[in-house]
Amino acid sequence: MKSNSFGRYFGITSFGESHGPAIGVVIEDVKSGIEFPLAEIQKALDSRKPGRKQFSSTRKEEDKIVILSGIFEGKTTGMPICLVVYNKDIRSEDYEHLKNLFRPGHADYTYFKKFKIYDYRGGGRASGRETISRVAASGLVEDLLRDIDINCYPVQIGKFIVKEYDLNFQNDLYWYDKSNFGELQNYLDSIQKRGDSVGGIVEVKIENLPAGFGDPVFEKLDANLSKAILSIGSVKGIEFGDGFNLANLKGSEANDQINKNGFLSNHSGGILGGISTGQNLLFRFVVKPTSSINILQRTITKNGKEVSFKSQGRHDTCIIPRIIPVAEAMIKLVIADAISYQKLINDNKLDMNDYREAIDKIDEDLLIALNRRKEISELIGKFKKERNIGINDFEREIKLLKNLRKKVKTWKLDEDFVEKIWKIIIEESKKNQ
Image 1 (cartoon, rainbow, N blue to C red):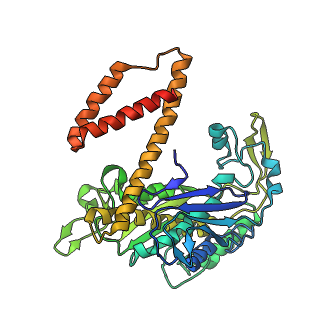
Image 2: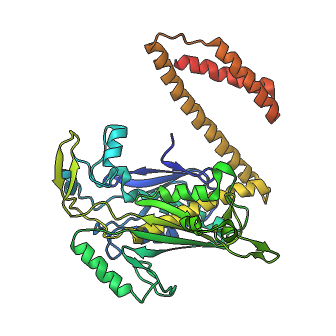
Image 3: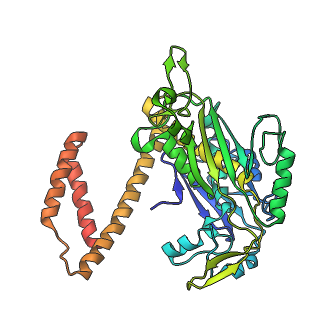
């Protein structure tokens, strides 16, 4: 499975670990001749890097983007773009005392159960540094977003809730309520001194998003946004519009009625049936407290022995200020993907590059499916060998071919051509068994 890749029509693949040589991203679906926005990408990376914001990790990283491929004379070449950020301020010795135990709230335990190995140095692939690749990639979609405005800000940090909004009140915490900002800082300072951490709730408002973005059933805009946001470490929940409060309303109260001038309310948050309505798109997500804290906790070792420990190391008292740029990046990638697909549906100003990008993406999906089929065929072969089951199952092949012919007619494809491809795939599968 390509679990480290994201997007259908604007695709990225990220790589790297917290204490490895570098974090990076490969981007393959970018047209040639586009001015590469290096300064904008660097600015976005600076907004999420450690050691820059109050109450964040004291790890000092430059996070300077390095271009390995796909850019020539400041423009995209149409070839795969590879961007990396080299890890500089690595102090892996801070994690030596953790190498044989599972930290509460972290992915150590689940990674070990799945892969039988895990990188204890700052969480490895599960580290927040992995998000560098997302932020870097999002800089390449600004031309697609155009007038779409994305605004993310916390409405709650720990026990503090925003009551008065002043969008001109700028600070490192993205906190728009100056009436209690001083109290919030004192609160976080006391949490930091105790070695503890807090989470909160982030609100997102997306303005100027046209109606019609998103697709029914499995590719709904809210479903894809949810996957994108929930893929960010520490995010544990999301709600659109009135969200969970809709449970308290009757249908007559919750429905967004319409007149000739448009919608009369926005309880659904600007999405109906998984497709944007043209209203402001509104959602909130909850961020849990940073799992690494300098307070004595209980856990177990790899061998199941109960122990007590402190995380030590360099950690965020509140991760929200560093998550906001990541959330914005993921939202941009989702919307860019939706725009790219909508452009194909509308047949709007398509050129040869658009068609080639679309068919190249389909070809890539076919290769991914064939590779996955090969892997499963090998597992089937192993299963049959262990149980002394014959490779050929002609009755099943006849049934499969019969079912395939029905689908070919439904989709109005060339029956002989599809049958030839199918037979080649079946023969290849038998070789793997």
